[in-house]
Image 1 (tube, rainbow, N blue to C red):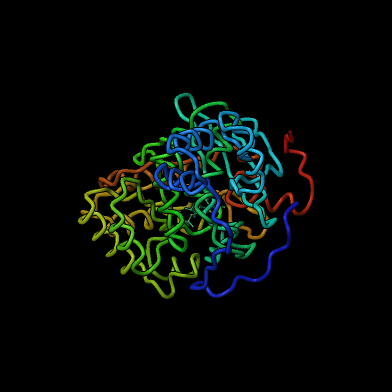
Image 2: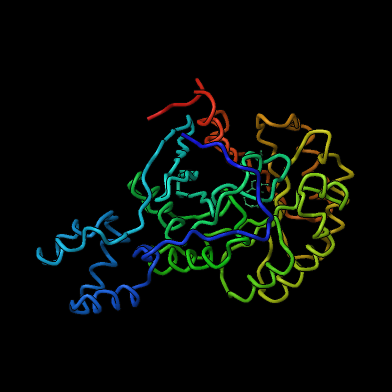
Length: 366
Ligand code: SAH
């Protein structure tokens, strides 16, 4: 059951949980090999450990039956770093939402989204989120802590094991602001790529944008897609929806995005939540198109997913179509992204919020 969360602390202080010793999950083959060598075991046991962690999904080392029995019996206390399933919900469209309990009792949300040729995982990067965007359920709940690398990797393995199918795509669009936890997020991207075997090109990192953090991300030379949550076509509107925009103006964010495109040669996706009567009018589309002119980009329009705490409305089909047309007329690449599992509280942080309050008759609980 979700806990009630305290008020968000200062945005700059995103503490990491001190975990000792460092769990094995999230570590590379060379690091695991060093570990087995330090245990007095032959080098090839590193490869075995790697395979059992990432392919077989062991939760404790004594489960590794290829290890000699005597050694296995001494390994019961070694931290593997798997989280436990707290709650699982299947939506009518096949989307599966998981609440996972971390070692310190905190709860995070992960979503598995199947489609004919894909299995996408929406992962959390923090417990809660300090950004407090006005339309976001996670933001309403406050911030607890950053996730460690293994806690991010675990989410993907959990979905892969539950579906019995390889995960093909990862989106960092769950709870949290990934660029406030860059070190762990970048480490997790490398691990998911090299150790779990998922292409970086099939991963998307979504950020609200923080000064200098996109520039720093460019230096990591990743092949992931950068998605920037814009949500507004001018500064006044953006800062009313996204509090951090007050100290990081739209113009500065867009300049950082342009520099990112130049430096990496990769196009940027812009996410734009459509709120009826707020930011969904054709003149907003016009203004947005002006900002994006000449910038290699793609706009993802996300019709608002209603949350309990605020009374924004979802725009009508006609106004969504008019917004799309206004962008396309100006040669802006655009896609409308409808959220999956909508009736069952799929929106960011919603399942967790609803579990913390009342049972929902729309939920199909396994
Ligand atoms: N902090 C990151 C990633 C998490 S949110 C970011 O801001 O990008 C992932 C996406 O879901 C963001 O674009 C966010 O604005 C959007 N989102 C949050 N609440 C939503 C809601 N109620 N309806 C639709 N989209 C929402």
